[in-house]
Amino acid sequence: MGPAAARISALLAVLVTVPVLAQQPNVQPVRAPHAMVVTVEHNATDAGLEILKAGGNAVDAAVAVHFALAVVYPFAGNLGGGGFMLIRDRHGNAHFLDYREKAPAAATRDMYLDPKGNVIPDMSLVGYKASGVPGSVAGMAYAQKHFGKLTLAQDMAPAIRLATEGFVLSAPEATGLQSKNVARFPASEKIFQRDGNFYKEGETFKQPELAETLKRIAKDPDEFYKGAMAKQIADYEKANGGIITAEDLAAYEVKEREPIRGRYRGYDLITAPPPSSGGIVLVEILNILSGFNLTKLGPGGSESKDRSAAQVHIITEAFRRAYMDRGDYLGDPDFNQLPLKQMADPKYAAAWRASIDPNKPTPSKDLIRPAGFLPPPPSVSPAKESTETTHFSIVDAEGNAVASTTTLNGGFGSGVTIEGLGFLMNNEMDDFTSKVGVPNVYGLMQSAANSIGPGKRPLSAMTPTIITTHASLFHRPRLAYVMGTPGGSTIITTVANDIISAIDNGLNIQAVADAPRFHHQYLPDRLDFEKKFPDDVVSQMKAMGYTTNRNQAADDKSPGLWGDSELIAVDPKTGELMSGHDSRRSYGKAAGY
Image 1: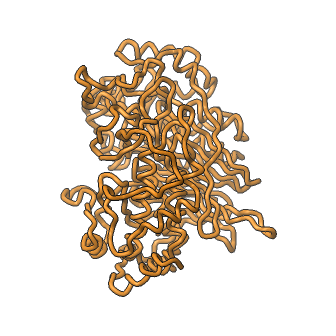
Image 2: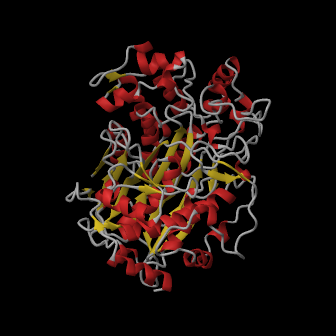
Image 3: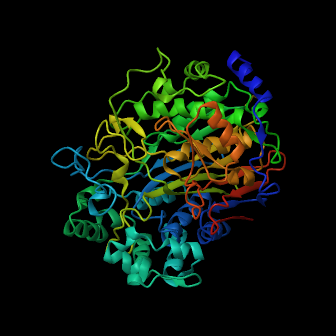
């Protein structure tokens, strides 16, 4: 143990350990011997399970889930958005599919600025100019063609059925459709709000236009990008002042990228590369933490154990340092040279680790990056990252695994529905830098590498992650965890906390999904907690010198939460699959066979 870690251990004498999971001491995961699907919406879970039972593999099920979510979870599920899919096949081969949205050819660096150079409010968030070229349809078609076993039509059949026959709305799903964003656009209001006659709990929500669009895609997915459907999309964009053209759609391509890899406590991580910032920042966080005995600080051991203020302090300081690097260096790898190798260097992590004060936080304004590892950073600019995303995890009977995170960016995206086609468009252009050097409303900073440019893909925090045991001379690596969450800038810290809860604190995977969350992103220099995080720990962090914030705590009607971890773990002794569906979303579920 290094001197910093030794000093931190001494804090246990004065820092009180407070139960984090006292409200749910006996939460248990769903178990299945062969295959497992876990998503934010129960109909989508059933769609994936149906395909697995019909002979499809994990990728077929992922395609089924994605299209089903476009029907039953329009808040984030989509045809008009994009995302990432991480695949690990039963032989141990990993593939990362990038079907992130791209800026249209007409996009310019200053397109959201007024003549005085100020950002025009909401222009990158709402309406026809807010959308990037969607990648989801291309991503699903590519995944099915290269890695699936069934046909695209088979994989899409559950989604087509859900759109045609409808599905019964739960209370939160019905309420969720009452979005002001949707009400701004007649085509959207007609579908999702019946022109102001809002859907109610127990009613069946049918989407005939979307059903016909799905049938056309199932027959020929290229029509979305190069056929009659592409022309419909482009004509509608042009008629309403949008900038996506038929040429933009025809030029879209899915990228296969090399996953980011790392190690932690004897496990191997496979995770998201740029244009996601998630994987490299996650690896940097865990590299810094690997030099501390978090189990002792936790102290961890089982779901009846607790997370202490001492552990929260060390984890927070790792978050702070890694997010500083995220802000300074990351962007689209097709347009920038990114120092990924240097950021993942264990020696660099050790240098960061040595800068952590065991007794108090390091103010972000005083943080100095260890010299000699990274090049000088480019100029700084704001990152806008929405929290309205969705993640799902799947493992099939052969041992193939998929972790997939997809998004429209904001809730219901730009609010725009393509008339006659029935699907919402993203507002992903808001994830680019609108103006260099000006912090956005979240205060999240990132480099000019993420400035707007034709064909560029905006930086993301989406972090689909698969974890295996470490290979040795005597043992092949075995699948251990499939993880991910939505949550905008909180995605990376949520996945990191899920890994720590499972590996260091020994929680079962359901308890991991439900554990209260905390987050620090370097700027603003503030430690955020979910509302249900124990008061005593928050008080201790404030006493140590942190500026603390209870998420939406002033609003008694707000649940004060973020993220939606949909997780799968493999029992190392029996091989049984165990799933944790995040109880923050009452209409999702885990199911297997």
